[in-house]
Amino acid sequence: MIKKIILTIIVSIFIISSPLFARNLSLDDAVGEAVNKSAQVLSNALEIENATIDDENKYASIYPTLSVSGTAYKANDSVYATVTPSLYLSTTLSASFAFNPAMITSLQTTSLSLKNKIISFDKAKKDVELQIKKIYYGILVQEAALDLQKENIDYLQQTLENTQAAYENGDIPEINVLQLKAQISSQVANYEKTQTTIVSQKRTLAFLIGLDDITEDLNLTDTLPTTYDDDLSKYTLEKAFAASPDLQSSQINRQMLDVNKKALKESTYFPSLSLSASYNPTWEVADGAIDYYYDAGSVSATIAFNITNMLPGSSNQKSLQKLDVSYSQLELGNTSIKDNIVLEFNSNIEAIKEAKKQIELSKESIDLSKQSFELTSLSYESGFSTFSDLQSAQLSVSNAQLSLLQAQYSYVSALLDLEDQCSI
Image 1 (cartoon, rainbow, N blue to C red):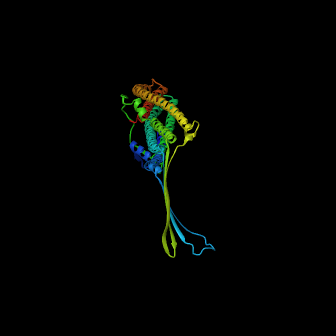
Image 2 (cartoon, rainbow, N blue to C red):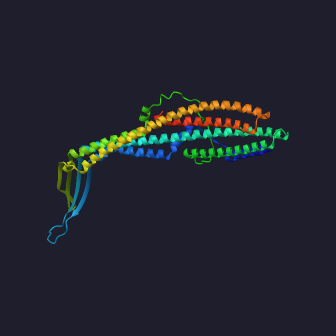
Image 3 (cartoon, helix red, strand yellow):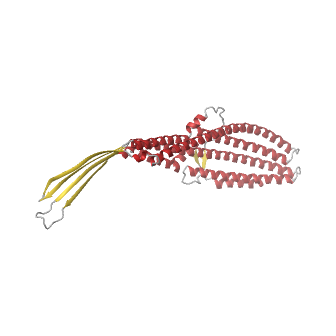
């Protein structure tokens, strides 16, 4: 009777928390959908689009200024005038152009800014990919743990039947039956808790991949890796340095400082050239006829030195000094970034090695605990072992299996971090 009640509870939990139809989801599909629908990735893509527009149109900033205007005017009437005042039509064409070498140098910042946007975009994609992979594998671990809990409950159910029969025959005391029932109730509670955790994690995954209905059940079709690479030589600090988006961005920022410094010096020590030209023809409208009246215009060229910018304490000189400070700050930042890369790299390597050790130890522990459990079961059925001995042996098997799952996830998680760090 107890068995039927507990089985009914488990089945009810499964039916309530699981829709009739589940969507199959591979790891690659999950990553692809999450990247395509990530707000951060889409925002960075738009920033690249804006930076591309700026870079493609950067020469517009040095275009000459061209303008045309038209004017119609008539002189005021005068009591002394002997003729009707004429109407005059005038147009003005003008062009101006200012140039300093700094203008050309500054144009380089647009392409550097575009490169920075691309780096940010790639980093956002990698962050999303890493997040989804860890969540995906985390759910697989929870589902595997759920299967282990189900196996434990099934075994305890079978043990309960045997224990109940032994009690009714007067072979064992009632306390053994009560202890087993309590253990089953505890296992069912843990089973329900794990199931709730899986539902929550799957809804998080559904949200991240952009499903309209996050309550839609997901059937993860991939599995945890079961093979482990012993050769970590392809992961190197050099690759980690080269792949670091922070170092890449810092390098571009250094180039931007170089450009700004060069442009500032050119604007300070090179003359500026200004060219301008205008043409202003005028026509007279009188007695229904339009006659050419006169024209005017001018052409000028100016070369100017800004002496103030060359003086100590001027705004340009202060800006050059501040750029030197920025160089020092950038170098300090680079040192800090490299130190963090080294620490993270070594941590990932050690985490992988430790996880592999734990995997091997867990496998050995599973084999030994299973052998111990089989012997204890035989001893218990023969009346030579207590229920506590049986419970302890069964718990050892379960703990060893859970330890293996945790070690496998630790290995995968650290390997994902290392692959992300080295862009492999």
